[in-house]
Length: 271
Image (cartoon, rainbow, N blue to C red; front, side, top):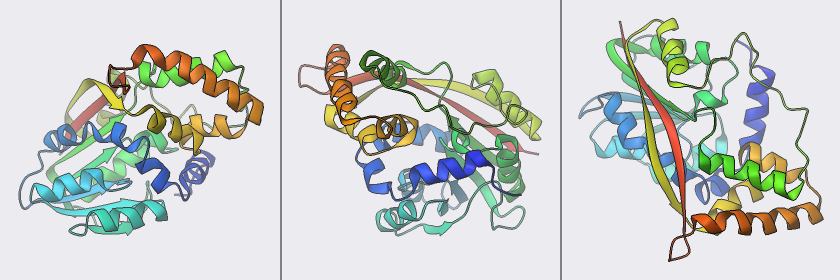
């Protein structure tokens, strides 16, 4: 199956950015890792596929649980960092929706904030189903829509600074998209042929250094990073001023940010 324009766009956004990601938004994405593995019922001796491993956060936690982990990602810089961080895992290049594994190769598969970044979500879930044995488990996380406060904050900052938004971005085709809600994600898994589907909303306050939260977009990470890259130097200066103003309400006594956020975690069984 050929990559969509959205897939190519997403891969271009992450190219060479593993270190920048690790120093900014990786801690945000790491929060549900334990719950993700619990939902997939990962235990000692299981063979686990971690799709879109990024810098290896979920893979490392699964290895610590005694699972045999195969961790894959589409981005070479992520793979390089994951190999260094998680030497116990088998780390290799692979891209959804076509994985280089035989049917029924794994006891479980997880994808932490990966379905947000694929052009054909249904095909991606079906591919996870293909490589997991009957009776095995699949668990995924996504960011919900409407966006939680931590992500909405950047929209507020860009609007206040008068930042121009890109209008030429590819999107998931309407006939392949799904509502980024609990019901929408649950229905996606059911329609992919999975059973015993459940979905929970996880909420937490992401605590981070203000510079780390700034450095994600400033280094081109994600869609907010693209917005930042499209601005003039003067506009970026205005964005920084608005950043300081709008993050002030979220600063603790120690100066760190406490940003309310949320994720959807769905899991299911392979029948």
